[in-house]
Image (cartoon, rainbow, N blue to C red; front, side, top):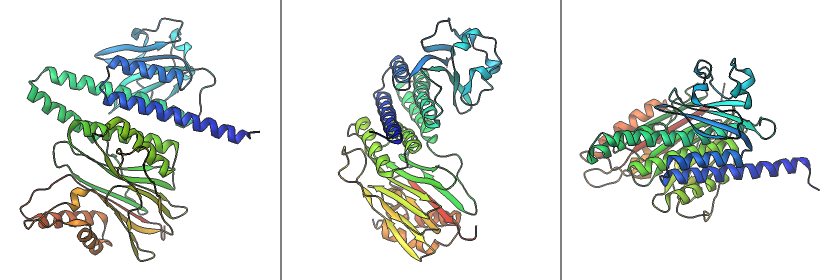
Length: 418
């Protein structure tokens, strides 16, 4: 007979699979450029089926406010019923009973969930659930993430369509690239820690208008964080959109599990299905646990990260992991690396645009030379390290051009005397 904890774990596992399958279907549909009406229909089916939503009304701003999806309601709910004096003050999921409104139609719903993008309200979701309102932050977060992916994708479609109408084919292509660049710029974290305990420093120079590199820092709680870097094959709009979906998938997965092999397996499957062999991604992900002073990591076909362990006076090349993502499904193997007793260290990540720089003699910078240079700077402040590296690389290439995007990501952790 199953224990209650086992039943709950099974339910949680089933729900997580439903969420991942839903995310996969939505992102695949976005990549396949399905119509806006189909995306709204998929959102409706997902809310009704996977998340047990009994009643729903989705209002979206499309030059004017329009109701794009509605089901289960008894009263007529039209855009003129929206009370923006109240709604514009909502920052997150809010119970209807807490709103100061006399609109009778609101009373059919349990909660209202705003969808914002760059301080602009794009949509409001009014929801009533089959049973009790779910208290799990993960489920509410996933509903918001899913709605955000769909509505922002539609917003991007509208933006691109408006620009294309106003220009020639050549100008339209240029506009599309600029829009894709804006989409890509949203991938990178706006704030990174720079404290006595944790310092994170990125440097990013795209080779073309739209680059193919991505880095991230994801706090999990007060004691654990994820740091990662990735490089997608190919350039342009398709690569930027694939990396955008990759970021959304990664951030959703890290809310559901901190099991790195599981995260990497799911990311690989999503890329494999969405890219259909047209693109692949190299990826490094590390999870640092401050309490246990351990770094777990997986290197998926990426250049080895450099880890300088100052306490034990050791240097590690972080190479354990698997092959590139998006080529095989399932992955042929996944090996997790682990470094213990880390309380004072420097982690340096980079993309192959750094090591593939060549000079006038067609000599490549390479991993060994890069490691040698960083070893000479390792005790410096990470801002100084990046400045010195940029200067070194520029001098090394002489008259040659940069072959690819240049991305470097440094993380220094010092728990001693904190």
